[in-house]
Amino acid sequence: MSVEPRHITIERRVRFAVLEPQVRPATEIWFALHGYHQLAHRFLRHFQPIQRGARCIVAPEGLHRHYIDHESRKVGASWMTSEDRLTDIEDYVGYLDRLHAHVLAEESRQTSGGSAPPRIVGLGFSQGVHTLCRWLAFGRARIDRAILWGATVPPDLDLSEHGHALSAADLHLVVGDEDEYFDRAAIEAHEARLRAAGVGFTAHTYPAGHRLDAGTLRRLAGPTEPG
Image (cartoon, rainbow, N blue to C red; front, side, top):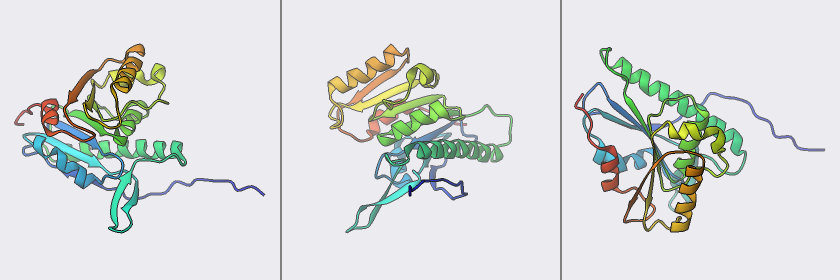
């Protein structure tokens, strides 16, 4: 007698955090995808240095929460594990598409209309890089600029089929010189893979480890229009 795993589709609530723009209409909306063990509202604190003008920053939270430390009961979240991974990928791509549509609809409701659509920036950090890449490849949302921070494009993502989605999003690669998860050989191999697939990108480094760097983030963000 064999055990057969099955699935059903349910409605559930999801959590996300927002840094509202200082003025409206928003001319730029960021979707910031956190790394493993992180929560959206804590992750979003790293983006306070670029919260200015007409920039809105949204941090979706991964669908899987867990205890990081059972003694302190500190909680983190993740986007997926190796268990039933294809289902999880399909679920989070659909979730991010719906959140993207919700945020743009809410922004449109709060403005008088007639303004140009906001520029959309996606930033993935660590595990969030894989999430962002798959969202670009499999999702329907418009992303004008993609920032991959502290991780590579997923090795199993077929660039011959999906590389155009990365190139179309004005791709930026960011890694710290002291990142413990990367050495120079790994960085060069990643960049060579993208070049071989015809995927254009701009590379950035900073003198630190596996973390977001405020100065680099400010340079990537640049100024925003006052609205």
